[in-house]
Amino acid sequence: MSEGAESGATGADGDAAVPNAESSTSDGSPAARDKKETAAEGSIAGERDRTPLGANFWKLLTSSGLSNLADGVFKLALPLVAIRYTQEPVLIAGISLVASLPWLMFALQAGAIADRLDRRRIMLGANIARALLLGAVAASVLFGVESIWVLYAVALLVGVSETLYDTSAQSILPQIVGRDQLSRANGRLYAVEMTANQFAGPPLGGLLVAAGAVIAFAAPAGLWLVAVGMLFLVRGDFKVERSAPASMRSEIIVGLRFLWRNRVLRTLAFMTGLFNLTSSAAFAIFVLYAAGPTSAMKLTDAQVGILFTTSAIGSLLGSFAAEHIELAIGRSLSLSFAIVTGTLLLITPAFTTNPFIIGGAFMVGGFGIVLWNVVAVSLRQRITPDSLLGRVNSGYRLLSWGTMPLGAAIGGVLGQFLGLTPVFLITGIGTLCILLFMFRLTNSAIDAAERASQAGLEPGVANNAKT
Image (cartoon, rainbow, N blue to C red; front, side):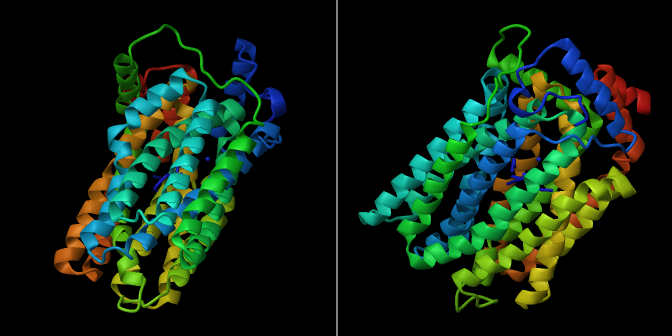
């Protein structure tokens, strides 16, 4: 439900319909687009195109895996280094808050930029910026300029780069594969991204922190640079056609209007935002609950990293199973199942400190989160026109990821005044309540929104038709 690793990941991913391999985006002819839309019609009926995804997709996949490995190392290394400076829950949770603030401050602008400029070049620039930032903080630690406020600054600036990268990454995929291939392509992307971000990244981050803060920050900087090299190999023009120049403000409004008028996308955005609020509250203080000899779980830094890999195992399994589950039980039941697994993920630490039980809950939760992401992201990419996808993605993420700073702040305050254990109970119950919104996401409502998009109807027309 986070759509992260955005995303992407906050967060998260064809039959001869699409020219694949090296020319997947160079053919912008009406005939090629008609083929894409014709093939995409089969997705509503439960069919999927099995044509190979193409060379450009696999290059993008490799680059994404490297980038997510860097992100996974960095996201765990940051709080583990921070607790060397302070044990205050509010200050530790504040790092998560600051890292997610750009999704509130900059998401809409990032979407407009993704619809104006070449999306691949935006991704290149964002990864280069992240590499330089981590190289700078590694140098600051090496020369003795150590402070939690340095970590706050880096978290904020890396978050800005992440906003640009993730928005462009989710928007570029329909330019590389056909819309009928999106569930499969997103599943493969999530498999690699979750494996790198959650399976390999956290234990590697824990080990690197144990070896030293300089190495812990220098390693992801190097990985982001390697990811840049692979992304350079993706060929094609990924700048979408614009009907006429307009101000950024007016372009943002057009994207927000499309999102707001589409009941399915609007509901998904709010539901994802509620889950990200509860999960951010829980995980903002989880390191205090799990790491150190005085914590409830009494785990070492390396063991915390290993614990998080259980979620990655579930995510990996979910990424391969998502398309089949979606076809077998439908999208509505798939989303409901994901909410239940998310509840289990958050509420389990309220009842036990056993790392094996918590790890099992993490595994089930990771499975469900990826199932949600594959269904929700693929649906959003099918419904939204390419020319609006950057702005719709950013508006969606403003609603869904913009709650993360608030969640982190709530988690810190609750942990400070109530203790850590009640935070998991409160967030678990809050997540289960998200099921109340599923009456808006029936299979018939989802299919109607998709058919309306293929017919070129305005979102409001589709909503009226299905009610």
